[in-house]
Length: 487
Ligand code: NDP
Image (cartoon, rainbow, N blue to C red; front, side):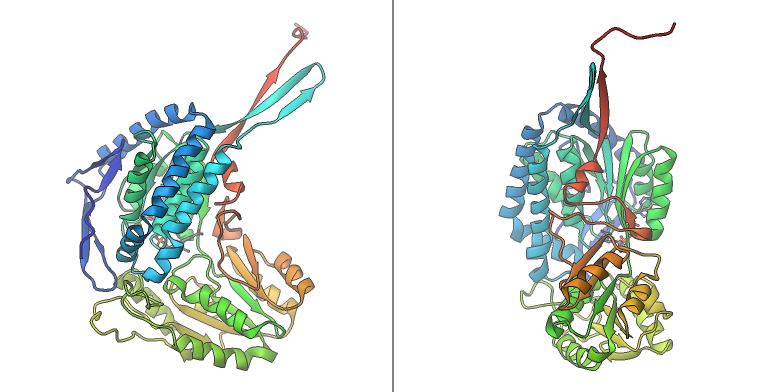
C-alpha cells in the first residue's frame, strides 16, 4: 500500500524536497503500514513558500473577482471528477471509512470551492453620501494567509480555508497536520491545473514548530487554525504580537438535549452521528447527551442495540461503518478516557474495548462506546475525548438541562431534539454555541457559517461570514469642495 507523493512540499507551482528536514511517515491506521515518507520543512522551505506566496498574492489581488471565481469553479469540478481517488487517499491517510470519505471530505471541499467562487463575484463595497462629499468602501484582501490543519478532515480543512482566502484575493501557505500530510498536496496540484498562479496556494509539511514559524512570519497577515484549544491559545497569542488576523476553529464538548417528546429514532440517530461518525474524531461532536428521564430507559436500550450493530472493519471496504482511530498513540488517549469513565463510576452499556478485526490486528480500532449514569463532574463529561465515546446524562427540566449544557468553557455546537417547536427555538437561543441543530446533528453545509464561541474559537468558516474574515474594509473619502482649514 503506497501513497508516496512526488515530494514533501508544494511551492511556487511545483513539488519541492529538502531532505535536511526532519523525516516523518504517514501511516495507514488500519494496518500500521507506512504509506508515505516525507520531510518537515526547513527554514529555507518556509522562506521559499512565503516569498512565492507574497509574489503570487500581488498578481492575484489585481485579477478581477469574476476571473478568480472561474479558477475556483474549475478546481471544484476537478475535485469532483477525482472524488474516488481523493477519497481513497483520504481513507489511507486518516483511516476513515471510504463510505464517509466518498461523501464528506473532498466532496465538501468541492462545495466550498464552488460556493466561494460564487461569492467572489459578489465582492463589493458601499457608497456613503456625506452631503457635499462622499465616501466609498473597498473590500480588500489581507495578503498572505497561513492555514494550519488538524488531522481529522485534512482535505476538507484545506479547502474550507483556501477557498474563501483565494476568493478574497489572498494567497495561502498551508501546513497540514504531520499525521495526515497527503490531501492538501493534491489540492495544490488541482489549483494549478485549474489556472491559479504559481505560489497562490503552497503546502509545507511539518510539526508544531513549522506552524509557529509560519504564524509569526513577518509576511503573514492572517492565521487560520483548526486544532485543539491549547494550540489555539498559543497560536492566537503568537499572532497577536504582530496584530495579525485570526480564525480559530477549536475543540468542544458539545451537548445534545433530548426531550421526552422527541422522535426516539431521530434522537438516537443524531446522537450516534454526533459521536461515532469518523470514529468520533469530530470537533463539533455532541459528546454529552442529556436525555429527559421519561425517555431514558427506552433511549438507552435502543441506543445500545443500534450501537452494537455498527460494522467495524477495513476502512476501504464500502460496507464498513467505522474504521480505526487516526493512530495507535491517539487510541491510547481515548482508552485512557474510557478507563477514567469506569473508574469514576459511569456505567458502561456498550463497547469500551478494542475489537478484534481479523487481518487488521495492528489497526488503531476502538469499539463504539456508550456510558450511562454519567454525571457532570466526571472526566468523560468535561474533557474532549475525540473518539467514539458517548456519555449519556439524565435531566428533569428544560431549565436544568440548559444550565448544565452551558456549564462548560467550550461553545462549539449543540443539538436539541423535541417535537415542541417553541421549545426547540427557545432552547437553541439559550444554548451557548456557535451552531445549534434542531432535530438533527453535525450537518455542515458550506452555505451556513461554522465556528465556536467561548473557548471553542474566534471567527467563522463557511457561509457569507467567512468572506469577512479573509478581507478588510478600506474607506476612501472623496472631497469635492475646497479644504476647510483653520490654519
Ligand atoms: P492540534 O492542536 O494538536 O494541532 C493542530 C495543528 O496545529 C497541527 O497542524 C499542529 O501541528 C499545529 N501546531 C501545533 N502546535 C503549534 C504551534 N505552537 N504553532 C502553530 N501550529 C501548531 O490538534 P490535532 O491535530 O490533534 O486535532 C485535534 C483537535 O482539533 C481537537 O481538539 C479538535 O476539536 C480540533 N478540531 C476543531 C475543528 C473545528 O472546526 N472547530 C475541526 C477539527 C478539529 P502538529 O500536528 O505537528 O502538532
